[in-house]
Image 1 (cartoon, rainbow, N blue to C red):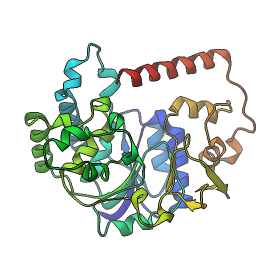
Image 2: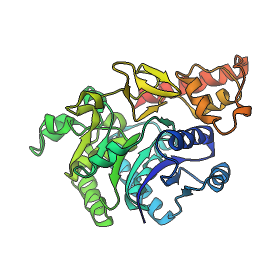
Image 3: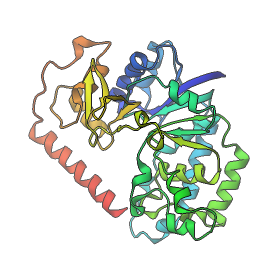
Image 4: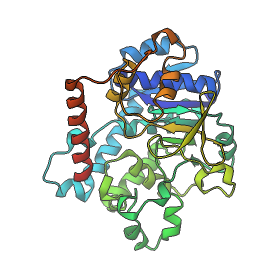
Amino acid sequence: MDSFGIYTLANDVVFDQLVALLNSIEVNVSADIPICIIPYDDRLDLVRQEVNARKNVILFDDWQVIQRWEEFAHQVWAAHSKEKETKLSRSGWYKSHLQRKFVAFEGIFDKFVFYDGDSLAMKPVNDVIDKLETSDFIFDDWEHLKHEAVAALNISVIEQTGLYTEADIRSKLHCSSFFGSKRGLFTIKEIEIMKEQLIKQKEVEWINGYGWWDDSFLFNYMTLRCDRPLFNFTLSPNGEDRTGNCANADPFVNINNVLYNQDGLKPIHRIHYMSYSARDFAYLCKGKYVNICYANEFLHYRFLKQPEQRPKELRPLNIVAKTHNLFNKTINKIQRTLR
């Protein structure tokens, strides 16, 4: 077992994003920290090639652990009232493999940081490691500010149990795109107890129906119910800790290809390219113009080790690609509406 490492979740579909993330970690975090890639599915030919080409990167291969987390999540989702009420088949939409990131709790690192694959690391994680001395979960996001209608947890339902107040719940709301934690926090026995509470005691209704199938919504229930100490940098009393992280929402300043929070030039842990598809990045890496914020920064890290392959100019998408892109964005919008 390694004392500290980094996890991410990937397959060949997000290969460009994976390479960019790995390069950004090597340059901005450390070239010596071991990295473990959790397979999103079995499309892994390109991922395996990249693993073999890097000295400190491995592929998580305990499929028994992966399957156990898959079954846990799917059983929980199937028990939610929203699943029973819907008139449409959602199996292709919500039975994803995002919950595989939770195998980190049974993984190879005693302490770890997880980055979503659609991210770029921007600074060392010493502060996360330090916080793990006093907290079991470390986050850096603004989910606690969301309106209850779109929050991860159904705050009013939980309040009615008398176990938690809104203040208790809100301070622990978080996303799952970046977090630090420790191996062994969720044992097999604990997960079985949690599954009993979720399904038989109907605490699954604590998870907001807006996204009951979302891995981060389930993660919020887990971190609240296990009652372990949690720290979110955006709630830190130190203003230097409170930054943005979202590519399409927060303004950043580029200094030598490292991004800083525009307000105060505060260092950020990562930039998260949420809401952009893997197809968008595939087009970008082939020299097609796609409206992605901080696209140049992404291209810098994607082709850091292969600068000769970086597109010298970005050309407009042809009409077929534009139509395909618009169709997919429309479908995604409809899916979000139907949630």
